[in-house]
Amino acid sequence: MEAVSGIFLVAWGIAIKMWLATSAVCFAIWLHHHKLFTKVIPTRFNRQRREVCFMPEGATEPLFVPWESLSAWVVQGQSASQYGITRHYGMGMGFMHEGELVSVEFQCGALQLAIANWEAVRGYMEYELNDLHAIQDPLELQAPGDPPHEGLHTFRNARASLHRRIREKEVGWIYGFFWYVYHVMTLWTLPNHLVEWEIKRIAKVGRKALPEAMLEWSEPLPPEQWAKPSAELVRLSAKVKALIKRSPRKLITEVFAEAYRSEPTHKKAPVKRGLI
Image (cartoon, rainbow, N blue to C red; front, side):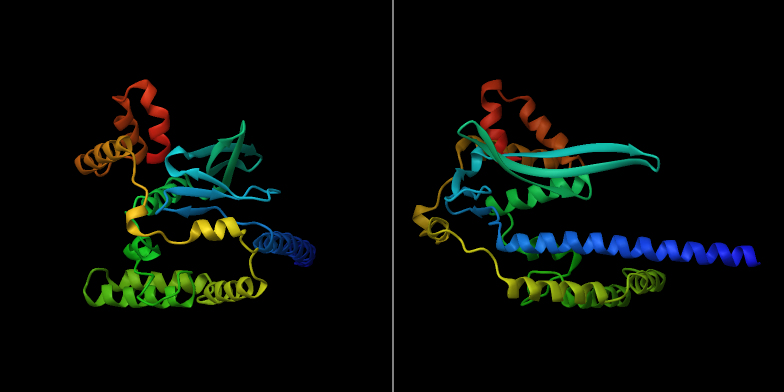
């Protein structure tokens, strides 16, 4: 018994030190990313002009690129350790400028999520998605008048949706029970409170001021001046939609591959960038 007690005391001390060290590293990463709000200007999309604006690090003036000349990619990699295989996913977009690649990349939790991120951008630029509600509507997390970020309102909306589904017998009480168990195990509304606090802190810290050229570029245009998609993009988009309607469960990557399979070689590159 004394041996077990001694092992517990030793392990307890090591666990506390590891927890403190991990917390310190996580806090440092969090603080670093928060400081980026005052240093980095995010990529902006203007669907009226059908252009994308990049502000490369160290640049004094923004770079504007036609939407259909933008390239997008999804990367997948894996690494091995004594604990097993770890897979990594990411999504990026960019274009060639004076012989150099100007791009923005970020990590994603899964391959499907990386593709979904690009699809959200593409849907917005092609007027298929007009706001966050159109993306999040299936989860019923956003009610009319709610702020765009996730927070306490998304938790309340999810709980109200659960009660409605139980009343309408869409799901049973067992599903509802485990819904509550899961959220109790994930500290109930504490994560949502942290998100609300983080949003307020970002607003207090502020963001880096936009250059005058970017502000002028972001101004709305009269409808008669809106840029129109190319004929090639319209044709290929119609082909993709027809393929999705015919095989709705088919992977989107396979749909695009089939759409391009019959295209002439010299037409693939410029059109493919704007479509997927």
